[in-house]
Amino acid sequence: MSDKNPFGIAITPGKLRAKPKDSSPKTVAKTDEAAEKHGFVDRTPKKKRGRKPSPRTGQVHAKVMPDVARDIAAEARFRGVQQGVVIEEAWALYKAAQDD
Image (cartoon, rainbow, N blue to C red; front, side, top):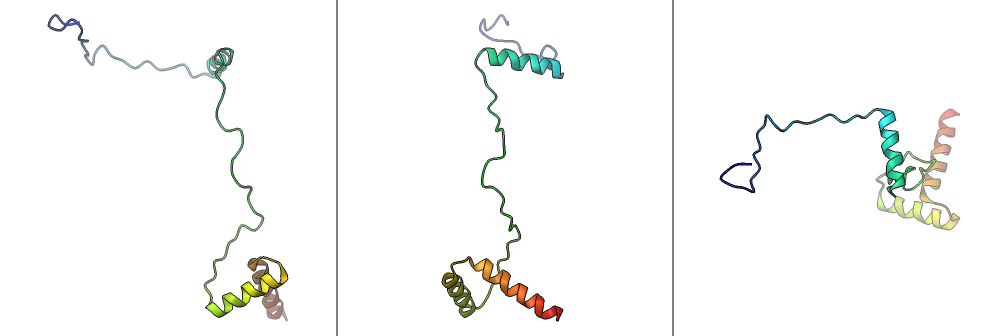
């Protein structure tokens, strides 16, 4: 303390030093065990949250003329499938024609 200010704290760089924490697995396990006894629980997520990945991960955002887009949408609605299914089938037909 300084004599000028009885409530002041003398902060000098020489007296404040960081002390490294012991982060060995044994110490961490001991700390976790003590924390659990006092009601602290691990709050890190146990598994990956969110939507499950789709098997169809390759998304194609094709820009087509409006009349083609309407035709694809109408065909998909008529057949009760997604537009991507119509495009996949059209691609399969194209590939089959290329192989012939």
